[in-house]
Length: 201
Image (cartoon, rainbow, N blue to C red):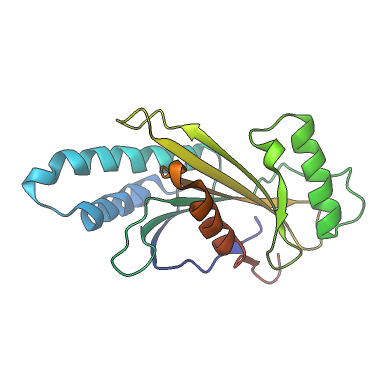
């Protein structure tokens, strides 16, 4: 059974299980109505947002993610376009690591990601979280789905060591507000710091 990682999310977020395609589509429709409204003149905006969110959920399903969270409001009345996707790679075991301590697992992971030149590997840094911290990689990339070619996405991956195991869970944040790199990364770090594993993983 995949290790279950939980977060304390600020404001209001919509949780979607991407593994259930029909239920996920219903949740996306509900989110679009909540964000955009149901007015006739907002039909194009609803369609574009629905398409974007469907792509996010579909990609999460393809990647084997077990949770997608869409930010509706980060604080009362404050909309924020951001997503959090949680993966528990079942086939990923860090056998070269010595022991199962967080430092050993994250150290081995860091070296492995750098060796394969993973996207953002040069930004790898350990950040605070319960259970020994997490390894964060981030990058700012052009958003190919954006109507405005100047839109840049900030993507931040947080790798958490599963307690007592040579395994990790990946939490990936993304936002099209790449121009607000520092404050958005600070927000993601603060949310990442609230992560904890359910007992018995």
